[in-house]
Image 1 (cartoon, rainbow, N blue to C red):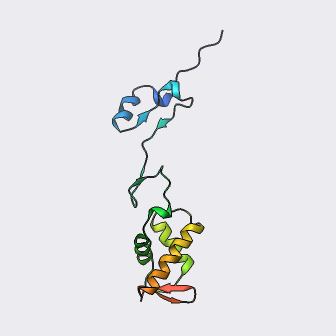
Image 2: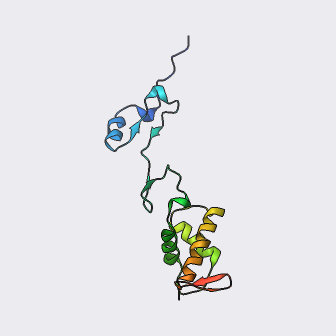
Image 3: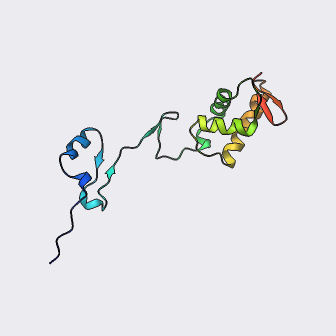
Length: 128
């Protein structure tokens, strides 16, 4: 005769369960999970004050936000435009720089050049 299957993992039972609930963890019931994993609260992305579970998009940010990020990462030394775009994207919390992000930052760079907040020499930019 077979023994009945366990009702949940060791992580969700025992004396640790009340302590984990006090720390803000939401625990799944053994009937809803087969692995007994903890259901952790979502982490916050400090730069945009959004839960990291939500996908952030470059379209969520205003052009002024993009310009501000560029000015934060570009200084008085000459920097390649691509490197400045990558650094500004990382500054805003993006892990990758795709076509839409590059295009949005290129537009912001053009705006900063017109406002004379950046100087350009070929493919390099810097603050005046």
